[in-house]
Length: 271
Image (cartoon, rainbow, N blue to C red; front, side, top):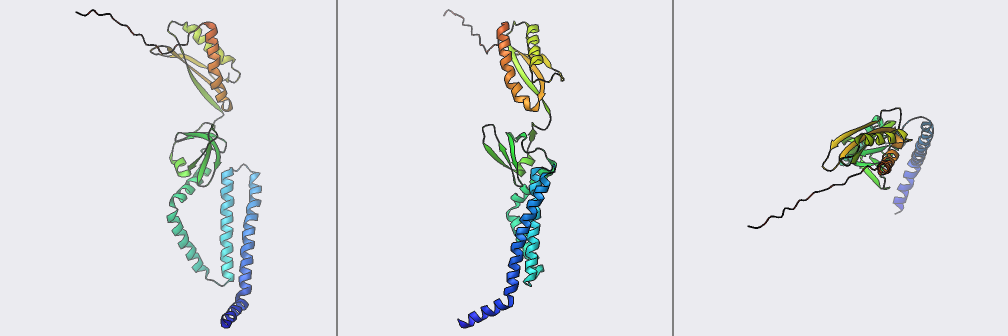
């Protein structure tokens, strides 16, 4: 036992300072990585750089600094940095094979951040899933639905699917359909629909208002109304317009039909 303590004491006396120095360099390097990342984030926040891209840049910088610090600490301990690099490469390869799906999501996340098919706060539909973009991460995209449900989609699914960005442009067209009974005054119907569109405060008067008869259906005549509104007013227009049409039709005596089925019974005498 005494011999063991002597060997430990000899090792500490010979390498203790280097070990302590390596530990100090590692701790200081990690602290420096977080400090530089924090300062860079403060600087980039003042630019127009997208939040997801900002997070990505800061994360990569911190990882690079930590790897550099580890190599410096290894050189202080007189360890072979070449062997360490090879070991890190081997570990990275093994991790890459095990996490190939995650790296695919990472690569697609970078493409999403660079190409910007949508931004945080946009209302989108991705593969039929609709919601407001809550967060864009390196591996996933988070959506919040109107029911306040969070949906997390892998970046590979997002980029390889169909993306509809409803918030990308400043204005949107509101397409609506209304039915009236056969025998209604068609000129009056068209006049009422056009007047409601022209008087609606959120309908853009600078854009063309389209009102026309679309089709003759089984129990009704269908009219199509197409107006334009600012993106933020889309749902307000699409929700308020039908109520205004209903009140106007009721006031003017225009019937809104429902599906009907006429059944004729013939009284056949038995022979």
